[in-house]
Image (cartoon, rainbow, N blue to C red; front, side, top):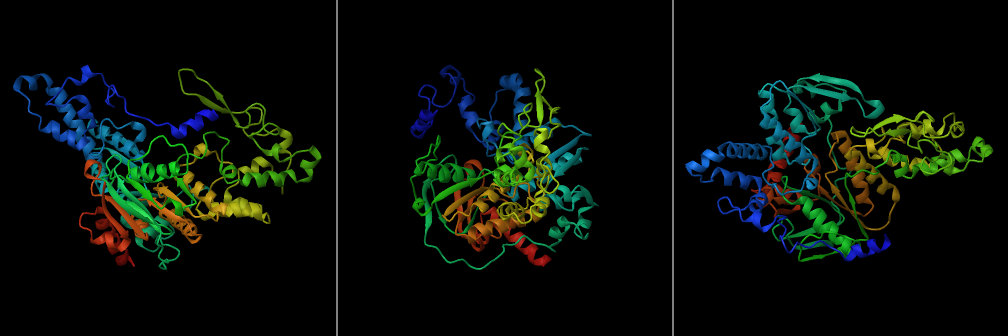
Length: 556
């Protein structure tokens, strides 16, 4: 294994010399439709492919043979373009699609089915969408409604909420503090109701703000990228100022993720001598020497097993185990901190090995999980559960929310510091032992942010965030902004990919890519202080940012 890891630093993928990345035999490529083989058609953008088939000249004899298929191809391409996916190609690997893109593909399928009297349930379809694309999506959802269907959307986006016929607001808080219907009715009445955070933010009674707006001292250090040309990037040169709140914007498919991951992050990993399989094409990058580290905080899961949880990730579980091991009862039994862990043998249940449940294989059906009969799902041996701290055993403590634990462990300063960080990023409602597999992408991302905040690292770190507001209510976004500002105050640097206009309007510096997605994107539309983008005629971000600034002033 260690040899493979070592060699991976010097190994990379190269195009196949036989098929030249077409993945097809030469004989298959000989077949052409209007001078284009199937590989050429698959490589075209969906918008370009639709234009190709719309303009395809067919003889009468040919049309008679292929008309049913020809009409179906045009129909499906039209729906894919209508949901804002015209920048994708048919050759695009499904694993590279974002969650929002996958949802929109399903939506295009639904539009094409022409069903009526159907209930559609969408979970945050605006994920990854620019405000321009979001309004296109709303129009399509209205089309589904007008066909005689019912559309239920879980959403935090202001534009989507205001376009709804009826709003159901749950709360008032998250976790144990939620679960109640606060309001149900027309959206016009929601802003007038007090006691609902959604109404407070829609009406302007509350706003997402930066904790401090003072102008930061100008830094001379930049990361300078020259000639970035990976995927649809058009040989762009970008200057990224350090020690500032930098936001990358642009419509879906404009090249933001390519720039952040393939150009910036992967090249920094190679600069540090770490293994990277794919490097983005770029002439040069200067300024990495000004960084001590670059950390990507995305929405990937923090763990893949039920034993991973917020307490272990924050290393708060180490303090909890130490506290339990110091009780008189634990000392009488000879228990050490390891006996209160479900990750190692000793105190964990020997039957389920600390999972709290048993997997039953159903062969041709999906596996079923049932509670462990030996420990009743509590994951520990009976004698370990007899040890109590202030009347609570280890299972009951892990079932506490962060808010509850802050009161329960009063006086345990090392543990409280870690728990307070979770509360500051808006995760006070999470249970300490909540399985990582139940956390949303937004929760996992904020948990990683909390871990970084608790590290107290004195080095200069550039943090990269990919849409950190995904899945967040405006009140949660305020917690996020407080946390990000704290990182800036410590002397770190931030770059965010973001579509949320409430966050974009608080940026120090904007990098706008576009103006469109796919082949019509990949250009540097604007870079500079936030205020300047409103004067760029071909920037969709500037247009909608100006609108939200005017709305904000009006509500004030």
